[in-house]
Image 1 (cartoon, rainbow, N blue to C red):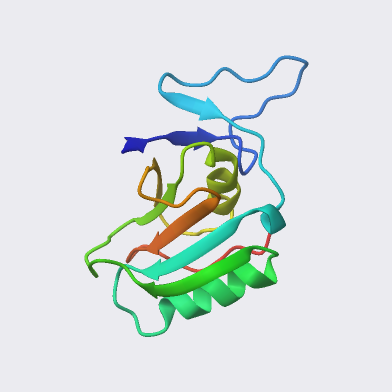
Image 2 (image 1 turned 45 degrees about the vertical axis):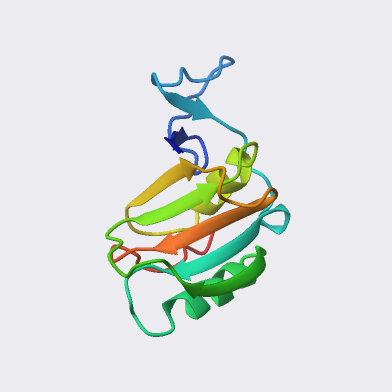
Length: 130
């Protein structure tokens, strides 16, 4: 599992001029994709009743494709965690721009190809209306 710090998904890290911003060591700059191109499974990782269902509905309103909801393996998540399959960083980056609260973006070969998983943590504060 690799943790990746993403810049550029929400416009952060961009500068004016003709050259692309330099990525910090260990980070990648990726172009976001349309929410409709991102398949998301939303999992409740902090135990609030109905949190995953509500987040999935809000993401669907923003154009994301929802693959399902449920509970994470524990309710001990403090931060939100976006896990993505290898090659799906652009989708994870796009999703990160909509999730409020402290969010970690992590590559995982345990996530099915073509999917991004969102585990909601106790810092989750809703879905931004981008």
